[in-house]
Every structure is written in C-alpha cells, then in structure tokens.
Length: 411
Image 1 (tube, one colour):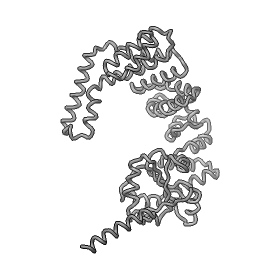
Image 2 (cartoon, rainbow, N blue to C red; image 1 turned 60 degrees about the vertical axis):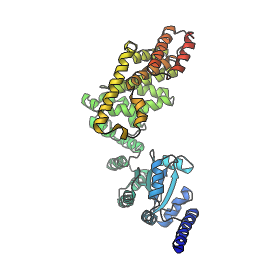
Image 3 (cartoon, rainbow, N blue to C red; image 1 turned 135 degrees about the vertical axis):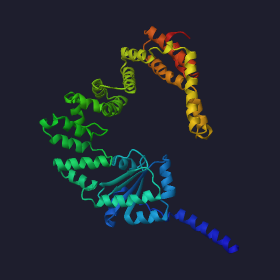
Image 4 (cartoon, rainbow, N blue to C red; image 1 turned 90 degrees about the horizontal axis):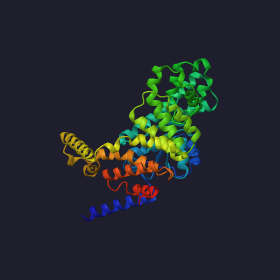
C-alpha cells in the first residue's frame, strides 16, 4: 500500500513539474516573435501551424485543454509543423489575424515558411478531426496550385485570365478576401465583355465583403442587367451592398459613400418586409446624424402607423395566444422543463407580441427626442408612443418618457 501511495505522489509530482517547466506530451508551440518563427520554419523546412484564438473563446479553451494536450496530436503536429499560437486581440496576433483575415475563433492556419497561406480551417474539432487537418494541409502543400504558390505568382505580376480565374476560385474555397484579384481580373476585361450579363454575374460570384473597383462599376452599371438577372440577385445585393456596406459606411460616418449605397437600394425590386424595415432604420439613423428633421418624422410616423389604435386588451390576448401556441408546440415535442434555460426564456415568450410592438414605438419615440422643441405636435405624439410602450412593457420606457416630458414641458 505504501508503495502504491508513494507511486501516486510521484506521478502527481512529475505531472506538476512538467506543467511548471512547460514540458508537454502535446503540441509544443514556438515562443519567439513571428519573424523568428518564419526563420525557424525555413531552417527546419516545415510549414507553420498557427492556432488563432482569443481569451474569451470557449471552443479555443476546449482545444487548448483537451485536444492540443493529447500525446498523439502532439506527435503528429510537432513532426509536421513548427507550431505557433497567437491571440487575435493582443500583440503581434492582431496583425497576423488581420493579414490572414481571421474573423471567427478558433481558426487554424497552415502557412509556408515564406508566410503564404496554404490551408485554413475555422471551428473546433475533436481529436480525430483535428488530426485530419494535418493530411489536408499536406495535401494542399503538395498541390502545384496551392494558395501559397498562387499568391506568389500573383504577387510576381501574372495577370493571365485563366490564372486569375483559378486563383479566384481557390480564394473563394478558402473563404479568403479576393478583392485585389477580382479587381485585377476586372481590369483586363474589355468593355464589350463587361456589357454581357454573364460577365457581371461571374464577377458577382466573387464579390467580397469589402468594396472594390468592380463593385463601384457594378453599382453604376446595374441597370444594364436583364430583369430576370436583377430578380435573382436582389437578396444577395441587399445583404452585401446595403446591409453590409451601407450600414458600415453610416456607422463610420462616411456619408457621401453611404448616400450612394442607399440610393442603389431604391433600385432593388422585390424587397421583403424585413429588408424595407432595415432601410427605414438606416434612414432614421441618417436623419438623426445630419439633423434632417423631415426624414426623422417621416420614418417615425411610418414606424408607428396604426399602433396606438390597437387596444391593449387585444394585445394581451395575442400575447397569451402566442405563448399558449408556443407551449403547445414545445409540449408536443418534449417536456418544457427539460429544455435548457426554459424558465429564463419564459419571461421573454410570455409577452412576445407586446415586445414586437414596443420596438418601433421605442425607436420612433427615441428618434423624436432629437427634434427641436418647436416640433410640438411631433414631440407630443412621441410622448404618446412612449406611454403606450410603457403600458405594454413596464419599466422599459420610463427614462424616455421623462426626456420627452421635459421637451414638451408637460412634467
């Protein structure tokens, strides 16, 4: 028994000592700066595996604690790569994550010793799946058309059309920004080619989430598309040009750019209710930003049209009806008590229609607080909206009501 106890203590001591000294049977990460890591990889004739994570990323911590520490994983990765770990929000990690366009965590990058991306994977994996990435990265490295080689060829000035099409396709597969390559291909096309729907539709397949020379050209020449092509593109164009680009331009106060993109939105046919609502929200934000009071009032009254005419008791009945309907569906599938966080969600579900109506009431009333005190009727209407919102959602509108009462002098 003493021998067993002694062995246990020895094992625990050795494990603690290994943890303190950094010795691990798992993946061994290079500790130097990024430039030094590149030099070390060239000397070792290895690719670099980069684990991109953040402090707050739970899947990252799972990988670090339960996958990277596995002996089999360590053996495979240590033999195949020089391993490197960065925090995407700290130190050199910020620039490295930006260079390789990492936007989700964890992301696993496999780059050659010159720093060219070979393979990229986003999301946690179990031990077997993570081990499979080694073969995939090595397969990509052996491909004469891998990402690293294509990037190098592009950087050296190759602008052959077939090469650029190949490169665009590989970038799309890896979900890497292709703006520079797309513009390079756009620039070698003739005016005759650009007048064809098929050419524009091909280029649109690769239009990134950042604006390019091609995107500016497309916005100016959107009208040349056939009605059938326009109809097929509405959802994609709204998401990319309006939701992403216009929304970002407005939040960053790049107003001339925003106005151009917002004007384009008016050319899109077949927009749904949600898309039209987003346009109104953008208009409202723009109106507040530039003190366009007519714009604020137009959207505010549009948001609240008919809401005060709905009796409160009918709203409560609809709340009850929707809650019971949700309960019936849940109970038909499983016991609601077994649903994770059901009690926490219950408070939200129990008055979901009231919440739905309170959103436009709040948005419009809050926007009207930016009106001058001379807009007496508009401010009076906004106060009525806020009071109705408070009736539906007690405690949510009290601050807004006080602000509007001060503006109207009704305190």
